[in-house]
Length: 156
Image (cartoon, rainbow, N blue to C red):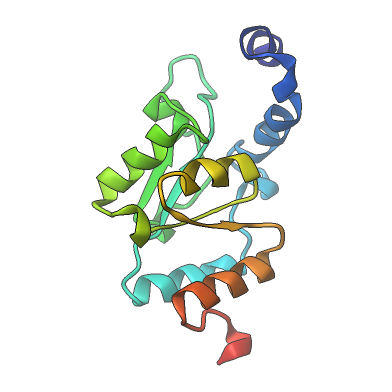
């Protein structure tokens, strides 16, 4: 039912994105959690003084809008920004600006990682460095290259 209403309101052209999102935001689903290889990377980045934030396009799962909307374990992140709570979605530049303002960062101080090119383009327009995540190992390598630090055990 949700899909039918969403398609009617936003257009069927978003079907692929909506299907992917539906499978990735349900708390408890294995594919909606962080891939374990990221945990030591996130820890290392935080040890180095970097702010770790998540910006996710998601939606309320319950009508009361009180239930948990992300399966992420907050202890690994300094902030989690959710589109359903902000009232705007990626790739709208306003959502990236909101995150920058909340974190007290300039665009050139931020790195945005996403698997959707359109979301990267939205962030890039503001001057944020972006990484297209097509494979986790490559993404970590790209992050290491940008930050000039080692994040993987393979480099230690």
